[in-house]
Image (cartoon, rainbow, N blue to C red; front, side, top):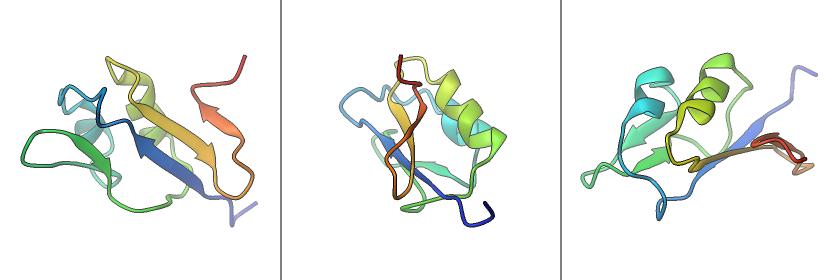
Length: 78
């Protein structure tokens, strides 16, 4: 399970630039000159900070899936 990776995306059309994601998980998110968020890398190790950043996004612009399988991490599929 040590090789498990997450694929994190940000819907930049929904992003309002609150910066909460970058504040909670600064190693995983950055804001551009227009204050739109984007992931720092194409994949990341699972972490509570990245999950917390996704959960705190006020417009639910952050999506996390298991790299390789596409299984939803956040938002959870219902």
